[in-house]
Amino acid sequence: MKRSYFSKLNMSKLILAGVITATFGLGSTSLLAAASLDELLEQTRTIRTAEGKANAAREAKFVAERDKQAELINTARAELKEQQNRSAALTAAFDANEKALTEMQTQLDARAGNLGEMFGVVRQVANDFSSVVNASMISAQYPGRVKFASDLAQSKALPSISDLERFWFELQREMTETGKVAKYKSTIILADGKPLETMVTRIGPFSSTYENMYMSYLPSQEKLAVMARQPGTTFQNKADFLAKAEPGYVNGLVDPTRGNLLTIYAQKPTFMERIHMGETVGYVIILVGIIGFILGVFQLFYLAGVRFKVREQLNFITDPQTNNPLGRVLATFKGADTEKLEQSAEVVELRISEAVLKEVPKLERYQSFLKLAVAAGPLLGLVGTVIGMILTFQSITESGSSDPKLMAAGISQAMIATVLGLAIAIPLLFMNAWLVSISKSIVQVLDEQSAGLLAERLEKMEAKAHA
View 1 (cartoon, rainbow, N blue to C red):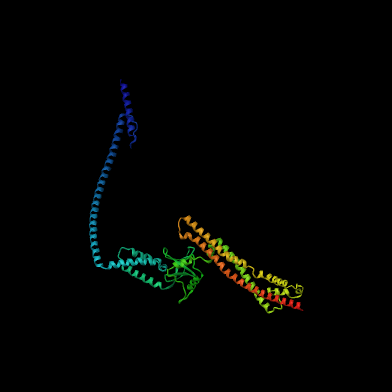
View 2: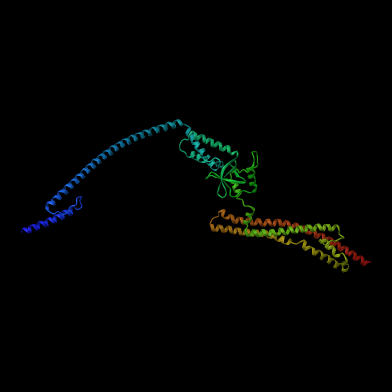
């Protein structure tokens, strides 16, 4: 029995030791398996003491933090009250200032009197002036004026004395510079978009040149830009002369529209561009005209030489030369061969007519082609006109509108073809008439001399018959 009691007691000790080890194994104090109950009791007392100290420390820390939080709350409440007091003071000051501003504004309006109308006029004039300087090339020489005038026109506040003085100065400067021819150094924009710092010549607000090139004003950049297309050699020579001129009076180009007319004139097509507008029909008309002109000039020089030689031959009618038609006709019945001719008058007449007819083709050559060119020129122009109108109606059909820009190409081709046709027909008509006149005068001389030769021959034949 006693052994059984001690066995149960040992078993209980082991279980209790395991429970204590499992419970406090994670604590700060590591427990070992107790060998006896006294040892287990001592370990339990030690652990309880350590835990009591830890709990006391935590409680002390909690109390300290609680006191600190209370202190922070008190500080925050004090600061909140201070800010509330400050907000109330600021609100009162704001209200007082608002009241003071209202009183001062009322006093200012009362004292301003007619100045309000004056400031309104200033804004209106500034708005008008802003539009002027925004389009004036003088602003390229004096940048910053556009922004000043625009700000003054849009400002709701009363302008200051300095603003009014500057506004008056800018108005006066615009009027003064309008009547001046100025040379100054500026940064311009070339036709390829690259900037260049160079000397610029400006004629008031009307035109501006760089060397022999005219420039336009770019309001967005407040700079001058070389026009991509220049108005022509005549105007460019004036610009070059103006750029190189010394102080004094010189001829220059003035555009009263401040560059608009010059830009429009520069867009005028050149002679070659107008020819290209005629396209294929235009080229054909020009080719026909060139061929007719070359043949006409060649025949004109030929007939002039022939007429000169014929006139010389008339002075030496008894000495025929074979270098001219009259000499060759006269030589037909001169020399030993004439004795072999038949004595019949009809044969003699035919021989003379044959000699004259041999000379006529050379005298009248190319006249048929010139007549054809004169007739074909307007007809080819009419063909080009019809083609141009077809293109015009086609562009209207495709676009669905009658925009003049869309119709311009077809109408240009139509008109250019007509002009080209008339341009070759009229000169060739006069040239052909001139050639016909010269050739007829030469043929008339041949006919007269051949008739005289025939009469002379018949007289000799009659004289022989009576003898």
